[in-house]
Length: 361
Image 1 (cartoon, rainbow, N blue to C red):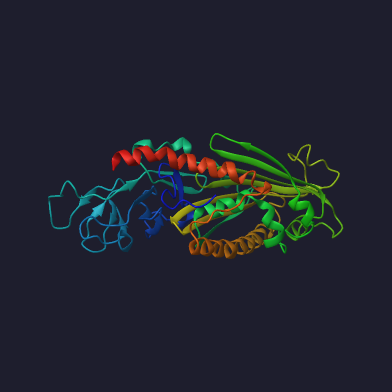
Image 2 (image 1 turned 90 degrees about the vertical axis):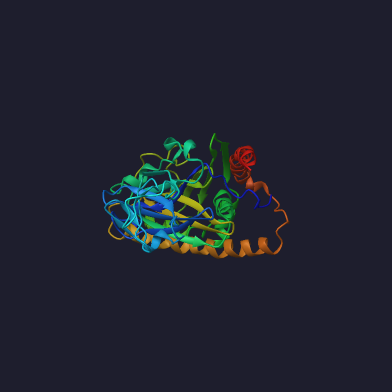
């Protein structure tokens, strides 16, 4: 398998553009590059989120240098105002607005604390295709903190990283990967391709829990556990995770639901391409083991951020190696049993757009 830079990503899909908390009503516009396209994200004075091309049609000035006003976003250079649909609604000192005075507007869906942008054909934008992650809306039972990293690697490398977890006992040995290395790399895998990607669950029974789990659950050093890692990849760039452990003997394998104690968290992973060799990594860890405990969510978040920075170092160096020899393939092993269908789901989305793009050219 190798990266395809000619068709790096599908456009007709919802991409995580920002956390809802990053943009305030009437506040400063937020500039991002999504799929090689410069955009500006803002909330109008009523609080609705909008995503526009970050380029005024008048003199090519970035709209991020402007400000949000009553009627939309105003260019900071000559004062033209554009509404949320990208149409120019005001030219200072002129009663005539050229019919071509507009900028590109991207469809937006906001739910589960996420601002999603549709980067392709607006006519194909289907709100129901935006990924659901309802745990973001339940701070009482699943408290969490939003995070964002900018990583200098192709977005698909980060998806691959989440599809093969045998890296955990090696990269993350001081946090989520410490303890029983053999038990982790020999986990039982149950993989199911889905209509939108792939679902898998890894089981590690009667193993030593890693340091993060011991601290979170308050376990003694000699405690054994039954550990699971459940992931669902939704193409092109979202991964939903539920992971944790119960003390050995409590039949986690038979049923994880409704059992007190132990350690468990849910994780949201949103990966948005910036360029062919860089991406945004939106993530948040939901504390399901001690949601009411003072400081527990902050401690979990600190451990997760530290852990993902360990991934970052490897991913960026991996990208550098690929860039140095771009034509070389990567060899799969038995541990890539979830990674392969994930890659196929992504490729299918990209290939489905190829006829439409070729016809337009």
